[in-house]
Amino acid sequence: MEILENLEPLLKTFWFIAIPASVIFIIQTVMTFIGADASDGLEADFDGDLTGGDSPFQLFSLRNLINFLLGFSWTGISFYTTISSRPLLIILSLFVGIIFVFLFFIIIRQVQKLAEDNSFKIKNTLNKTAEVYLTIPGNKKGRGKIMISVNGAFHELDAMTENDLIQSGSVVKVVKIENNNILIVETI
Image (cartoon, rainbow, N blue to C red):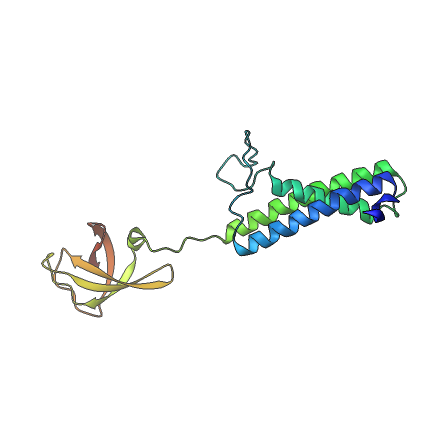
């Protein structure tokens, strides 16, 4: 690294932080896109959660350290010739490093909002209306079928009624669930 040997000590320090932090950041980014970043790979003996809940964001993690070092070092390199006061440059670099960690936190929170569980759960059919697909015999003497929309998807499910026979095409309301797979319905 002959290029860095002729630099002033502070600028050389910024470069020695920026190069490895950038390489590790690129590796982390590639691993994120291929799905290999399930964890930072480091276990800590302390809990650095900011929220105290089941959040994947930890204040003290390798990813946040790299984000901080990226902001710190590249700010120092970028403004080295512009800002003549070295203490001011270091304070600005520290501030930008903290901003990088904060921005990462905001991005993670926004991505978490995108997570949605659309898996079908039969309990979500309670009190919903449906259309009878196959006639439902009365007084729980047999099963029919209904078409019901849950979370924007249609499902064909077994149904029974405690009342009189319900013809195909009738609109019904789900009132109970029996045996975790049979819906008890009644006409509306």
